[in-house]
Image 1 (cartoon, helix red, strand yellow):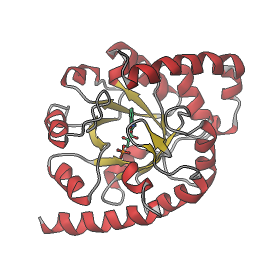
Image 2 (tube, helix red, strand yellow):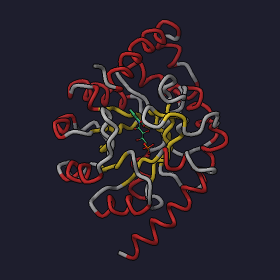
Image 3 (cartoon, protein in one colour):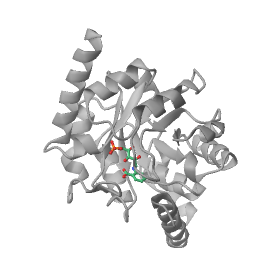
Image 4 (cartoon, helix red, strand yellow):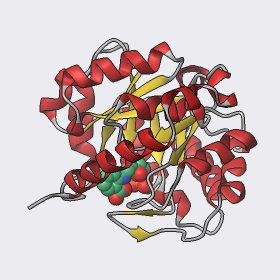
Length: 267
Ligand SMILES: O=C(O)c1ccccc1NCC(=O)[C@H](O)[C@H](O)COP(=O)(O)O
């Protein structure tokens, strides 16, 4: 039986084929944002406010259904930025996450914080789309790519100024890490059965090259969990649902930051 990733990737192939027919690469390359320099998330994670959090704009997900139906980028993303997010992740997948590329473009028009296009990249066309709609950073997911595809896509992303976050979950994906990747995210959530396991992520992180930034992704629901991950070598966190399910995600992020710093200083 097909798992959720198989279904997402199957749909993504259809979407990309259609997008290529409707918007040729040359048209993407002529869009104003395509000419703009990218803002570095790596620099902000290394030397910006702590904790370094990539906050996510996420209306729904396959694991949780609707989290904030009808939420707009304008309601949430500027608040994340003013509370010192290291970067902001904008889900651009429509069918499974309720996002779209216009959300990314709106975010780019409102904030100067680095923006991650969060999607399921299977084709270089999507990198150019990301750049044209205002992204600074893209995601590659090892579970849906071969090491050779990661290398090729990461090098293409870098050639147009985008930074690259590579997401791993399983030990056998460590071979996907290459020099062209700026950061490695370890997904705490198994995308096949949605189980979250922080200790599995810590074991994985220990096996990464020391010079790569390590980002803990998914299923982080408390400052305590983030402090635990930080103590075990993670440099930053990608958090969506925990903030998005609260009345004001930006205030939830600010509170999380305060709690994190109090806890981290006391240990
Ligand atoms: O979130 C899901 O249910 C999901 C299911 C299948 C593939 C990807 C999925 N999530 C994408 C993400 O990477 C998360 O949105 C991101 O790491 C934030 O996670 P969370 O803090 O748990 O919202």
